[in-house]
Image (cartoon, rainbow, N blue to C red; front, side, top):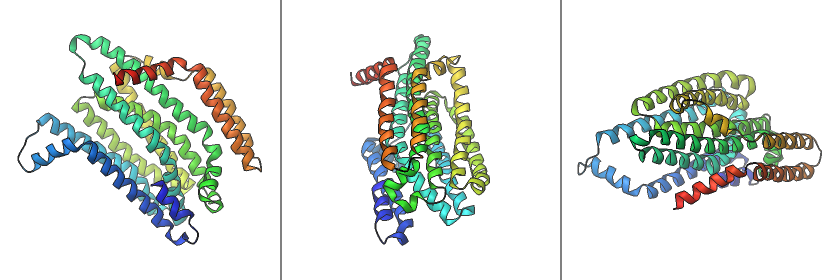
Length: 347
């Protein structure tokens, strides 16, 4: 998606084809995802085809679960596409272009890092739930607490790393990737910075929802889908109001607000299931890591005001090294847990 979009946007004399860049980018992404899922789920697809032609059957419970997750996918699609409809309705052509550019660039991190991470977390939670026995329910809750706190801490770190350092490099990223024209576009740098902050909400929401949806019963999933539908409606309403005031940045603010509702709902469910907030306390990053990141964020904020882009880029590389080094130095137990989980999965 990014490669095709970048080709159209950055090619000389192709300014008239900028809208096609985003269309071709979305089409390329959709085709690739369809192919990958079709290959990965080939056996399941064959079962579905046999059921459709009347040569096979499927358990009622399985069909009900498929229906529940299908409804959930539809609500998520409406939530993701609703803001684009808002832009077409009340947004200017410039705001539409800025949002398309920012969301396509920002979603690279989401699709490459966060989405696979969340899908793997969902599989681990579901597998842990399916292999549990009634006699080991206390042990299951302990394992769930350990796994959730570990993965949620990783989500906190990924989100915070983007939120505290991303806004300072938004304009530089646009300049390096798309040129001065898009970097200086009104609201583009602010919108990309807002997307970087939104990554924090995406990361936390992804893991909490992955856990909740993996262990919920069908009635609980139906309730979760209702909350998702309500948040979709609220997102559209908030997007209409905030877009008129803040432009493309308003859509990011609206997303953060509605995701906060979803996070609160899943955390309430987790609180009841795990009987406390011990998982949340254990998921918070080490205070020394947060202090290092606060210092590096302040440094890159200062260098972002420098006239030389090389100074700002160099400070970013140095601060990135310090941020990673603080994780290696102060979060060694987390690293061992993640590596142990990988070895356990491999065994």
